[in-house]
Length: 472
Ligand code: SAH
Ligand code: SF4
Image 1 (cartoon, rainbow, N blue to C red):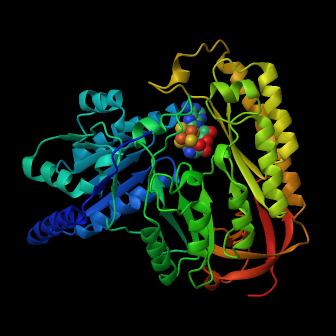
Image 2: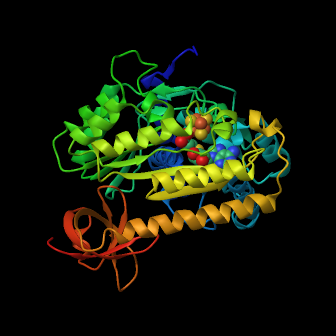
């Protein structure tokens, strides 16, 4: 697949920052300290994009709020992967009528994957007059210019052009300043799984240059982040579009070489091209977490073919085995779609069988959601919602049982965990994560947040482990 790699000139990002400075000066001249609210739906990539929106908003002089009645600027960063997320966005955007009535000068922007779909952008234009600005993921780099057009022109602005996607470096980012950080290494997707809208709304695969990724990782480590998750729709194809001779495993090694005590995680890996080199590298790099999210989607070869996933269940099982042979303590998680068009009882049983064989540490299960413009949307889908729900419930039971059994196996073990936050509860006031990413609740001093400590696991259930501090 060939396409032109469109990199936004750094001067253009500087111009956007210039616009932020002018907006900030304008607010200051009015004696105003504006507040912004950024509401994020969907995946970690969207969380990372919202950090960029906040970066620009901070340069516009904004503070932040979670209260829509106090906000001067509201940005809703949307997801299009399933209908449920879209319905929630539309409901919540509709409800913003109330806050805008109270504060007529409030600016409401809707961005992200949902509005990159033409029919959704149209719907918002026609039925949601409360929205002032709509822009797709490819326009995020020029958010300041777009918002300035709304402010100065006092009119609605729509910018969600069709695009294969752009790349931009140097956009300011406002992270939460805590323990964990997202780090995008690539954007877009080339895989066109038949059910999925992502390639249509996020464009083709574009990898960031390894030197830019490593420089950002180094900066994060220097800022004190301890848990860095590398993000991409399919990290295993990192670098293929660059031709720089650096693949994903090489990138992990380069980040592993950065001095400091921190963990490298990543998501998501596509099973069609997870390599032995990757597993070997994960095992060899002491900072790389032994955690692999490897979405299988289905255990039926017939359905996998219809999904255009380019692997079969045997290949998946071989990969899981190979990964575990390099890392016996590997935490392996997956995504599964239930009720893909035409999925029969037999297909579903294949999925159950695969799950019983692999014994995932955790499974993220979804009922198939029809997405406009995808090939699966026109496939015959004779099964009822009730059939799908029944399968979904059964799969959840299997998943919960296996997770709980696996968590019980931790009891009595001493593990190194990273303390990452407070739970707000008295009994177990701290939360932490194992190297493999399992949640461990603890009781201890909040000053431990951001530190690696040893804990003894006392108990575990489907969702979490409970431990006692051994040292700290
Ligand atoms: N790039 C990642 C997944 C991104 S979407 C990958 O390929 O693994 C996250 C998950 O949402 C997918 O793994 C899939 O299980 C689910 N998903 C995507 N499209 C869906 C749809 N139309 N209906 C239901 N679930 C879907
Ligand atoms: Fe969607 Fe498949 Fe790309 Fe993942 S790999 S984003 S499921 S098209």
